[in-house]
Image (tube, rainbow, N blue to C red; front, side, top):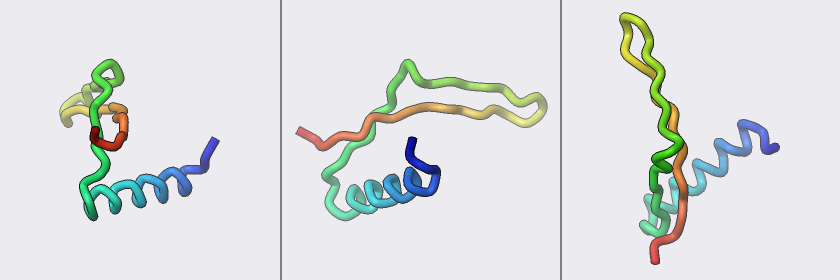
Length: 55
């Protein structure tokens, strides 16, 4: 399993590529969406995305 640091670096690189040339897209995986209410404070939302190159 990749370390948190290597995952963060990979995400940083992918985001930089997307900002540079718009060749990546991110799509929410709807089944992954989870909401956890926090009493008197709001909520935490956890979700996953698929990253791909546009067709």
